[in-house]
Image 1 (cartoon, helix red, strand yellow):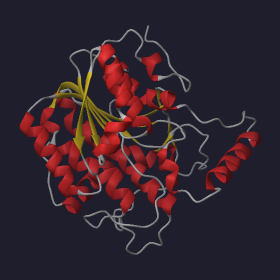
Image 2 (tube, one colour):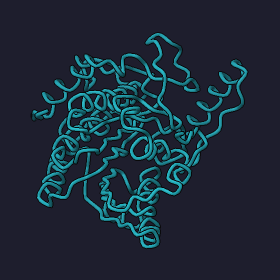
Image 3 (spheres, one colour):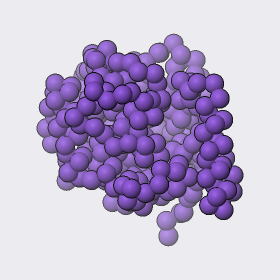
Image 4 (cartoon, helix red, strand yellow):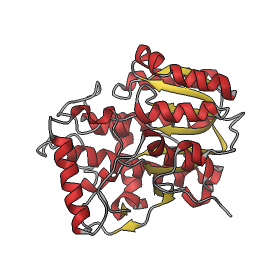
Length: 327
């Protein structure tokens, strides 16, 4: 019987007695938070980890513990310069990976930003949609040929996808008043739809994709929030919890937050998670689009797992980045 895990499970829980020797895994965003922990546990269990980061000097310092665990566990870590907000950087990184020609068993699209002030990437895309979705869209598709049979893609989404669906008519807020949480929700919905579409395109080659919600964790993601915003949000969530007869909200630890990515990428059955959205180390139920937007509730909005919607986003994304990707 498959081991059951939950919201309190950690990376070490889900990888207990699991050897990743011979596995080659790409993780984006290894200079902070979940990325560091994800890389650490993978390398500690014997995997060869390619860690991507925008700031290599910061990543070198941040991953010192990863290298120490890798040395003990038989794994390794190499760093790759990658700025997801600059498609020239993304393409340069993929050129290096393709030139090396070394296949991957898993790609974890972990990097991202949250609730940023209005801004644009180097290519003129709204910052959150451009960084969280389009950067990863180009990265993963350009190295799809390196994904071997039996490999997986895990995209990190969020319960924040419930804030908003993607807007394919106005992805860059050219006509819509900008709201940082609306933009964040759009980008996190896009992360799910990308996984749905990628899975549909590649499952015949035994390559699967899934999206995950890591849970609420205190990481550098909160750096753009104004003073007092996090406390106000926590109070609101606790009020919702009290009204529903639930216990007070608690943040996950970083090892608990990274657990679902590792579980979905390496432990869960591929057919169980492929083409789905997961949270707390299980596949989440689909909830109606008009369900309340409380962040304590489980589930994924129906619009975020709609195959036709995923295909439409794929086509729009290709148009925006000026590049088409074969099945």
